[in-house]
Every structure is written in structure tokens, then in C-alpha cells.
Length: 268
Image (tube, rainbow, N blue to C red; front, side, top):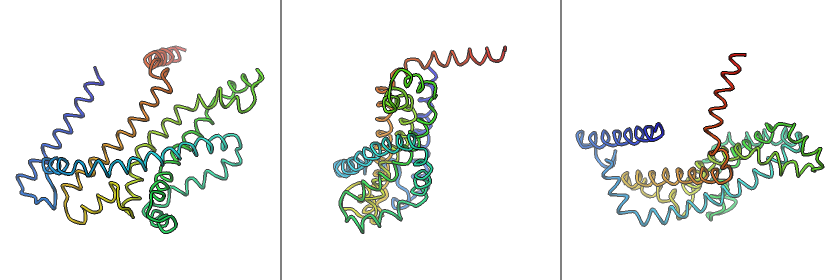
């Protein structure tokens, strides 16, 4: 009941903001090239639907390719950093450095070396998505209780088997947390790459309509970008439900037992 109430409040707040926006534009007579009304944005979305779908498909393909590569590299590097602590000490600062340089600076460099094809866009997505996945997964591996690892090792399991049976499954929630962040960033990363240099995609379309001061179409494109980002995040959440069904199944029990533990610890 509380969940539905929260959703109702969210929807009601969004509708209120749209209503105030619409009335403000109409009352004050704000021109279209300054701020379009929500109805103007909806009309532009209807007329540009096919174009937005075509460009959105290109951007989504780039985002999926980038986040897929990021996922594979993050898995390999996360295990490598956990297996060899010296590697983590050497690589972790480099990962942080990659996040300090704005993508608007790196994207033109990628285009210089790789051209105007799909490669620079995918690489931009990889650089934006790789860090949260790799760091979350590495931290999740590091937080696994060593007693479980010693247990399977004492039963004859090798080091890789200990990762496969204990550490990787235990680190899956952390991995999914990083994937949720990366999935949300993936569409933005692809759009940034297309903004710098492309002939198709939402970033290219956004730049074209922005230069023509067609702000109703700009807002429609932004709405599509937001929708795709939410869909990517929702897909990762669905993946989490498939990977970790016990998290959802035992969640009420864990909340209840946690409360009991807190009460018991308070009595002690």
C-alpha cells in the first residue's frame, strides 16, 4: 500500500509540475524558441516520432554494445584486482583518473584516431560505464567473509573454484548496483559521442534541432533520452530479479529478523 501511495505522489507531483509549466507559458506568452509548453513538446514528439525512433535505435545499440564491453572488462579486472592486491593498488588510481577527465574532452580525441563511425561512441560509453561496474564488483569481492572461502578450500576446492562457488555469487548484489549506475549513464555516454561527431543518433538529432532553435523538438529528444535511460536501468533491475530471486523472496523476512536482532541486541 505504501509503495502505491508513493507512486501516486510521484505521478501527482509530475502532473502538477507540467500543469504549472503549461500555464506559465500560456499566461506569460513565452515564445516557442525560449520555452515550449508541454503540449508543444507532445505535438513535436508526435510529428517526429519515426525520426526519434530511428535515431534512438542507433543510440541504444551503441549503449548496449558499450555496457556489454564494460561488463566483461569489469568482471575480468574485478577478479584480477581481488586475486592480486598489488594489481588493485596500481590500477585503482588509474580508474579514478579516467573519471576526472570530461568526456567532452576525450570524445574529440577518439574521433581523431577512430573516425566518425560507431567506434568512438562505443568507447565513450565504455569509459563512462566501466568505472562504476568494476569498482562495485571489486568492492563486493573484497567484502566476502573469508570463512566461507576457507570452508570451500578445506573441502578441496581450488582458488578459482572458491571464486566461482563463493566470492562471485556473494558479490552479485554489488555488481548489479554498479550495473544500475552504468546502465543509466550508457545512453548519456552514447549521446555525448554523437554530439561531438556523428551522422545519426539522438546526439546528432539533438545538435541539429538545437542549432535550428526548435526547442520543442529539443525537449522531445531529451524526453526520449530520459525514457531510454530509465528503460536501461529497469532492464538491469529485471536482470537482478532473475539473478537474485532470493533477495526479493526473503526481503520481508530479513527486515523482520533485522528488527528482532536490533531488539535483542538492545535488551542485551
